[in-house]
Image (tube, rainbow, N blue to C red; front, top):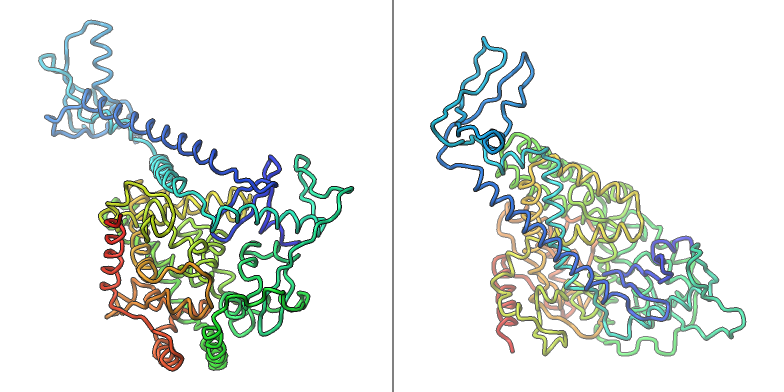
Length: 600
């Protein structure tokens, strides 16, 4: 119950705001969705904002063409009064002169550029009454002569508006329409049973005294052969109650050890919490629809995991950890210096790589367990502006239900990408689909921008001021650079991450039904064969995607050595180990986008 704020909140209207693992479902107490109208309003606001931005750009362009001249090739040097710059010397002369011309009827005059005379305290411009006023600085240049932090902030806000439109158009996705009502009903029953009241005077009271208490559905799952009653505890689960509901009546052993702290991977807090839950009998619908052959293979997989634990595969190397952190910090410092030195292209490239590497490192820290990983979990927030809490919930669902329809958001990307034809997936079609193989890979550039938008939304809804301060540090850092560098580096890093990690899953099997953890990972994941050290550097350990999905808490720099062992185990246990060259995987992903694009 003390962990409730991480899983359940109420808004000002008294509606339950459940923090789901892949999105935030805004549900009323009666189970009705309140997101459709909000989406329409958000789209309208975003479109109006874009229209205003376009109008402003048009106005600036017209003003610039009116008050500027391309025939002037001279440059103005600011004059000085003593040791202080004379700001009037760089005032837009064209504007001042034309105003004087209109008000006083003076003849047209031209201000000529001149050199600073060290013997003269105040340099005055000379006059040329024969010609029109020719400014040496355009109106647009004068208008944008604002502090760098202000220009960068405006550019980032405009960028966020565009990504917000894309995110809102996608909208939240539930596995089935009735799931939203089921979720709200379970939440209400849990709160009534546990007599938990959220301190909000405007919130409706869920517990009604003169009404008989309804029977509550039991939530039970099995770990290491023992069934645990998670009915009351589900709300306290950091990834949300829906995560536990999906495993009701099923074996969650492999998922538990893959994602939680249990001792050999550096911490044992999750295992201690598990041992405090009430042991119960198996529910009537236990293990219904389970593939017995796939379940039996999980037993040998657990033996493999325990052998790796005993051999120290989950231990972290301090030297490699230091070098990984130094790599990210060094690139970020170099990129910042280049940006401040005016080398925009070089700064964008270096910062883009820095953000990509920070994404890989932060991803490893979030999965990892132990003192070091706990202390460094905010790496992605400081460098990339990503919420650790939001990412943990989203990514945990991806690992637990990889490529499973209705659960894994990474394969539910409509209307931006269609990985299956609408006739097969049952979702609405969009005219944009027929061109997705053309705009697909360039669109990966907005990956980090979308994640930034989701992170800000998550922080605001959870009112997490601590994490909000971390994100604010990132935006303050970006505001010290030219806006082209700030936006360009975010887009470059998003492309470098999105184009690589998506290819290892999106062209693989997408499953309708929930399967056994180990079997699902082998069916939905493909390793990339990185031929040299440079490619391995940019893949950041994600070329060993299958190893990572089976052992997420293992340090990423151990996966390449693990690959031969896992290949041998897969061959001995009837699993297909999928691996292809990196460029071939990317080509297959493009072909998949093209097949769906031309499908009826």
